[in-house]
Image (cartoon, rainbow, N blue to C red):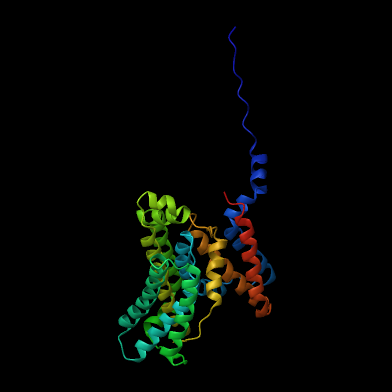
Amino acid sequence: MSATTLEAPPAPPGPARSRRLRDPAFWADWAALVGLIGLTVVFQSLNSSFLSSGNVQSILVASAILVILSVGQTFTIATGGIDLSVASVMTFSAVVLGWTFAEGWSLPLCLGAAVLAGLVFGAVNGALIAKGRIPDFVVTLGSLSAASGLALILADGKPTTVISPFLLRLSTQGVGIVGYTFLLAVVLALLAHVLLFHTRFGTHVLAAGGSPEAATATGISTARIKVAVYTLSGTLAGLAGILLVARIGASSPAADTTMTLNTVAAVVLGGVSLLGGRATIIGPVLGALVLTVLVNGLTLVGVSQFYQPLSVGIVVVLAALLMRFQK
């Protein structure tokens, strides 16, 4: 009589799902999405107008600049670096747009000058970090101050009104409740996703961040990668400067330094490793939405704006704690 082999029955899905939900790594990977859903439920229960079409449109428009800056920050952090100058470079690019507009330049040239200003700052940052072998923290901290100072000098410390039908349509119109500025941010995020995960350049970025020595041993020029990612970050900051001018109708030399913190917060919430080598694009986009929803919701329910930075800080620390459990 031949022996038969009995196979163990498959484990029931219930216990496996329960174990997964108890695994901190699961919550670390999905922190931004879970946070976005949770905040939406809470704020909608506290104020029924939170999910109104007007407020949702306001949230999307408000998040567009942070999404673009966070995408650029993702590339620098993916290499194990950080760009502390993005908010100041954005402000300088906005001032360049305002100054050229006041000088009578055509709008396309003004927009090009704004983007070029951001690109140059990013390229200088990358060159000093990669070629000068100066720590990214020091270089971009210096650029933060330099860009803010140049913005004040160029604008003579005063805002410049920019009246343009094109910029007005860009900031106020859209497709349904989705404004053109947010659509632009989404398109840039999709292009960034393709660049990071479907090109050789993206592979080199992640390799340079994961193990610079191994990347160099395989022939990857980590110096060129550093220059490229900081140039990309600066260029996106220049684009964000255009959206900033479109949104407020003027270029102001006063930099919003909290925006830099928010880009890092969005990247951390999105599951990007601050040590480099691990990145995603959808994560930081969701992280930017979480932070925008948090501020919008707190304002809507009447919480003082003094508590808003505190709430953002708490969210970032919690996300950083969850990152310890990422696989």
